[in-house]
Structures are given as structure tokens and as C-alpha cells.
Amino acid sequence: MMEEIRSLEDLLDLQHEDSEIDRLLDRRGSLPELEAYKKAHRELATLDSKIASLSGRLRDMELAVDKAEGELKLGEAKLEREERRLFAGGLSAKEAEHLRREVDMLRRQNSEAETTILELMDSREITQGEVDHHRADRDAIAAERGRLDDLIQIEWKQIDGAIARHEARKRELAPLIAEDLMEMYEQLRPIKQGVAVGRLAEGICGGCHLALSAAEQLQVLKSEPPRCLHCRRILVPQ
Ligand SMILES: [Zn+2]
Image 1 (tube, helix red, strand yellow):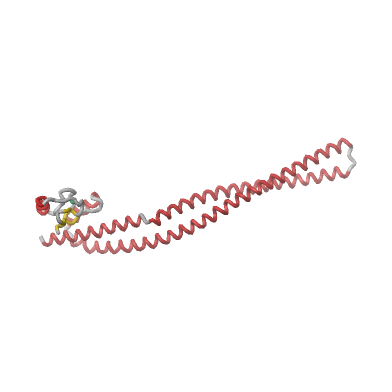
Image 2: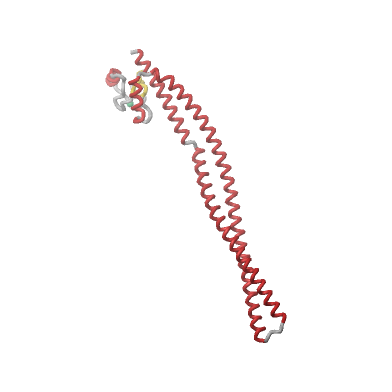
């Protein structure tokens, strides 16, 4: 009987180690920095896609400016040629009139092209400003994400160290516990919210915290191992 009790006490110690490990694992997965890290990560992804789409628009604008400038250059060359022909004289009145109209039209076209180019350059400048703004935000958030990552790594390292110490203690305890008792413990733990064994103190089950009457306690203590009548957890008498 003494040996049995010893085994049950060790089982309760083991339960304590397992509960601590569960608590540490839970903390490992629910650090407040983790939520902030995920948020920063999502924000970075959003900014990256905004920057990519704006950069695409910028490239299109560059091409449009280049094209318009090329066309303007051609238009200016043509205007110069036609003006030279007009001023050289030697044309009939009808030819001169026709050429003057042609020159006027070319001047109008070139002037419109210049306006278009200026407008394109303005939009390009605005878009470039947006890209710069997003990049600055991106850099700040990336730095924050890096800072959070460092914090998380430090906390995880501490938690993992603590878990390793509890695991070592478990390895010491395990050989002290009867095999069938250990088997029952391992079967119960997953279906009992991680708590398979509790102290029976002052008639209260340490697992479900429900009371057992004096008669019920006697009945419990007679069974091998003692188990709570309410929750079926293993009970360790005081
Ligand atoms: Zn119980």
C-alpha cells in the first residue's frame, strides 16, 4: 500500500509537470507579440501589393511620357520643315494658304502634345509620391516586425528552456509510477482537459472540484486506483 501511495504521489507530481508544460505551450502560442507580429506581416503584404500596383502604373506613365515626347519631337521637326518652306517663299497664293493652315494645325498639335506631357509628368510625380510614402510606411512596419520577431524569439527561448526543465523532471518521475497507472493517466489526460489526476482534499476532488460525501470517499478509497465518482479522474488521498 505504501508503494501504491508513493506511485500516486509521483503521478500527481507528473500531472503538475504536464500542466506546467501545457501552460507554457499555450503561452508560447499566444504571446501578445505574436498577434502584433501577424498584424505587421499582413500590413506589409498589403503595402507590398499596393507598391507593386503603383509601380506598374508608374512604368506605364513613363512609357506614355516617352511616347508623347517622341511624337512631339517628330511634330516639332515637321513644323520646322513646313515653316522653312513657308518662309522661303516662291509659293503660289493657294499653296501658301494651304501651308499656313498646315503650320497652324501643327502648332496646335504640338501645343496639345506639350500639355499632355506636362499632365502625364504631374500624375507621374503624384504617383511617385504615393510610392515613396508607402515605402516609408513599409520600412517602418518592417522594422517593427523585426523588433517583434526578436522579442518573440527571446520569449520562446525562455519558454523552451522551461519546458525542457519540466520534461527532464518528467523523465525522472516516470519510472517511479506503476505501468498500468501511467497507462490510465495517459488515456485520461486528453479527454479530461489535460488533468487526469487530482488531490482528494477535504472531500473535494482536485480535478472537477465537486464534493464527495464521507460514504462516497470511503467507496472511492476502496477502489484501485481511487477515482472520482463525478469526473472519473484518478484521486490521490491526502
Ligand atoms: Zn472529480
